[in-house]
Length: 451
Image (cartoon, rainbow, N blue to C red; front, side):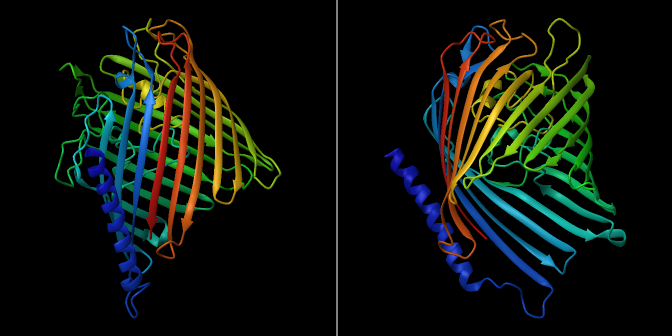
């Protein structure tokens, strides 16, 4: 009966979206005649089934994340709309609802329809000060580079939302260069919500941590050379003190991060090189850290658009024998990054806390047909600091396979699509852990989007 209820709920979501789309085709104006206003709207529905088991965590006695086998479903619906006034002023908002059902695992299911939250709500003002500045003010998604320092503002609700409450000013007064100036303030829960469930969005462990993440920075993008574009940035982040699940107060942190990213292109080869360093403090401890994300990709000839890439991802770790913390702080980048499976391996250290990782890897990608794209990553993960329960430096051998596919475009509207993906990942853990069972992760996603 419970499965039937959840299936019917999912079908209701799909029917609702289809009805909206069909209605939109009849009444949506492309642009009102003799009016400066341009209205747009759209939405999407995403269904996911997820299974994972045996993902090791840093724990003593040894253990695996979330009790071992987890099997659950996620149902996310989003609707957005906006209005453009001439070319220099716009307002956009987006609503999101997600509920979950667990077939097996320690986490409780979310009641349908859970809570309805404001996921985006911002104002765009362009062309300020003689067309040298653009301004975006409000709740917005912020993604920079490959997301190694800034992508995810709400890590504890997974991919339901990624927003930041922020101010973004873009300076355009230089040739081939833009400079983004950012201010961010993310509280522990969404205050713009209907039917609040008091969900923690920023915390580190399963408890409600009451952690506020704030700060900002400057991000420069330069394309003076088409063959060697580059980016440079500085971010400051403050993490307030917070209470863990044992009721102990953890000290606040202040982190300064400097970095640069270079993207040379020498056809058919492309390169990505990002380096960053950190300094600051966490309570009485000084904090330092550094990051390297590098890859060389050869875009081979062929109808299937084959690519092969060699890469290295390195994040410094905390040396337990010193009085300071040398571990990399992932800032606003607590998301799966290179692995949907391995993000769960950080559960005992902090939700999505990528740190103390050295991963050389090789990647392959193919486009066998116009509706399918395949990506394969094979890597071996090390720990720069041997601070795991197994005492060794080998995190393990990891393999990830992702297939993205398009089922149908233009199904009910000119701009809609039914898409999906299948993700399979495996980790054979090394002597960094005391677990030796092979970990597995699988996900099936189907989605429908229209605009």
